[in-house]
Amino acid sequence: MGSDPRTGGETRRTPASSLGFTEQSSRQTLREGLVEYFSNIPELMEGGDLPADLAHGLHGHDVAHVVFGCDTSVRGEVVLARWSLFGIEGSLRPYLIGVRRRETRGLFRDFFRAVRLRELPALIKAGITAVIRSCWMSRRWPFDRYGPYLDRPLAEIRQEFHIRVV
Image (cartoon, rainbow, N blue to C red; front, top):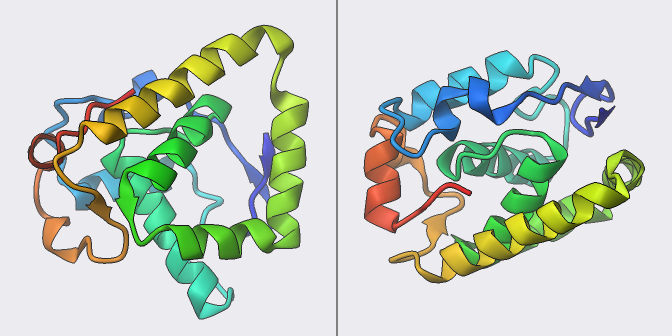
C-alpha cells in the first residue's frame, strides 16, 4: 500500500478480478465504471483542494484506469503508465505535473518498496504488452475530452478504440 497524493491517506490495492470495469467485455458504462472504481478506493477524491491543473490530470488518470481496465495494484499502475504514455492523447503534460509533486515521489518510493524481485519479469512483460497494444489502437484515447463517452458501455468504447485490456 502507498500514500495517495490526493488524500494523504493509504491506497487500498484491489484485485482486478473483482472489478467489473477490468473485464474486456464489461457492459458497464464509463460512468458506472468510475462509480465502481471510486467506491472500491474510497480514499480517493475527485480533486479535493488540489491545484486545478493537478486535479484535472488526476481525474483524467482515474478515467484512464477505467477505460483501460487497470486496477490500482502495482501491476495496474505499471500497465496504466504505459497506456498513458503511448495510448492517450494530451496526457503527457498533466502526467509530468503529477510526477513533479513531492507526494508522487513518495508513491514511487512506496512502489519500489512493494515490488519483489521475482515480480519484475511479470511487471516488465505487462508493461511491454500495454505498449504493443497501444500501437494497435485505432486512435488515442482523448485524455480530457471523455465526456461524450460517459454513458457508453466500456465494451463499445474498447471496440471503437481497439483497446485490449492487459
